[in-house]
Image (tube, rainbow, N blue to C red):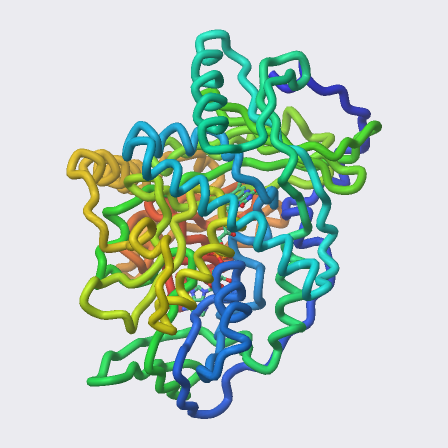
Length: 480
Ligand SMILES: Cc1cc2nc3c(=O)[nH]c(=O)nc-3n(C[C@H](O)[C@H](O)[C@H](O)COP(=O)(O)OP(=O)(O)OC[C@H]3O[C@@H](n4cnc5c(N)ncnc54)[C@H](O)[C@@H]3O)c2cc1C
């Protein structure tokens, strides 16, 4: 479909990198946790969520530290398309249908505040992250969706948004001007530099134990005593409290990037069922061409092969909550000592930024109009719980069948353990345990990025079994 819309020049396909364009820069690491500590607030996870919270707390007297399992920013944050916008595909429409216009207006206002605040932080802190003002387009390729676009327009106008009707690549579209693009990993590195006294990398949280008035958290063999915890791990690695896996589904998207003859400064997304999203970075076009739910995941190897003249290819996943509104705040209405932020439905930058203000205000016991909007303990609709649970069960069944694009993989039992063996192009065997430690789902091999992926909740492991993305908090390396 996009061939009709864009024209590309061709480059040699052999140079294609199976990694995100943002990760192709140098990083340095900060020290790991190497002693016991007492703190007021412990933030777990160094993606945009965790670092945004740390940034919000920097001028307050609460003793706060952030711990990150690997290097800050290398989780979901560094594999996004990194648009900063409140024109978010069909998300606003879904929220309107699900919750009505009042809640949708509040969500829209929160996103506008998030976009404004994020660019303000970048400018005030002088973070060099290639921030660019970039008009956002919401376009529509199918005639039957023209009316949906019109409704979106009416809703935005009603909410005092400066939106215009226009065309994008010949298709009907809406356009707003107050939106941006940036380099997400440079932003994270800028925040890391600014807040380095408070950050510990290569520090994985292994255990959290609740005591009377504090938490004991085990990291690298040391204990952190924290009065409050902010969990910013994208997806909690534990089931209880909150039963997170039943309140959302995971969606995976396929992204490519390549140099283009005539780069532009716009960003765009469509409102139709099959999602297409794009932006530019310097001479590169970044193109998200397909999204699918866990149970439908197909590892579109053929598609990538067809477009082998791209410079970068990667996949990324995000959490879509049952009712499309992120989970930001306390997991338990009676207890403000354990907070979470995530479930951004692929719109993490505006949400993490405004979410970090919500978290700060909860910690400081201040009023914030968005606390009730995002409260994770809000009531979810029963039928959506059923749909998402069914989707998860479908993914579990699919994963245990071992037949998802797995010609290169041998499954067998060794020492009574179920293992999967991938034999690489040099005939080297890579043996891993074929079960995700999170909820015991089967794993499938991802031939694009050479990882073992859990279809159900999105954990990913390196070719030799090291956990690189949660919710799993454990490796699947096989030892005889
Ligand atoms: C394809 C795609 C495109 C997207 N494009 C956009 C976009 O254009 N604009 C937009 O606004 N949003 C976009 N998003 C969404 C956005 O990227 C995410 O919502 C956001 O980056 C999530 O950030 P996070 O900090 O919550 O998670 P992460 O970046 O994953 O950070 C979580 C961190 O926690 C760490 N961690 C996990 N477990 C532990 C532990 N036990 N101990 C210590 N640390 C731990 C991890 O190592 C990780 O670094 C996109 C998402 C996808 C999938």
